[in-house]
Image (cartoon, rainbow, N blue to C red):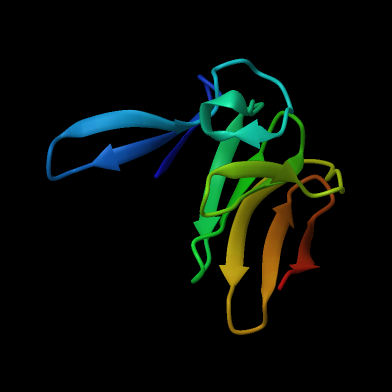
Length: 112
């Protein structure tokens, strides 16, 4: 997976077949939940995936975390960061670590 910050999409990269396809996002820079390419991202920057196949995306222009379930349903965590950076899943402790560069903090978001 690759976050395409300029085109507001999440790309799937198939190295075996040398192809790139759009997995998520419709290319419209917005913060709209939905399924697959019906969802809108607003500058997706970083991706982290947990052991259950859930994907966590930092949406840089909206400063929010987007959650993608294994069926490609996109939802938004109800918290806005000052300047969201990287996200990292800590599966052992069932939490997401989120860097906020303007706040100079690492936040923990619990999930199950």
